[in-house]
Image (cartoon, rainbow, N blue to C red; front, side):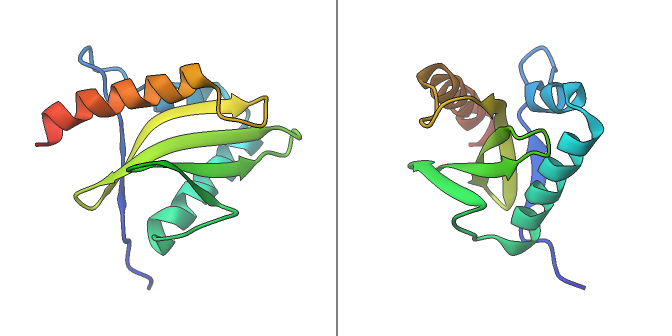
Length: 117
């Protein structure tokens, strides 16, 4: 059996909600399956690169999923102490990662850094 290299954790807000988990629940079954499989591949195969995993900026990575519905999903994550922490998920509609999505991920990482250290 292949060992898990990263355990998966969902970013949790102060109020206890998990935005990435909630976003995933809203997707159709096929899209959930594709994204889940891609996350699992990263979990077992880390470190990975393109085309599945893209580097965004220092410490921030993206799982790049091609959905059956001809859409593209991204799950932004950081690696911290043996965990793959999923900080943001969205359906990508343009070539570049939209600044609001990037800023949201950065803000969540700042919140995490206060908890992790």
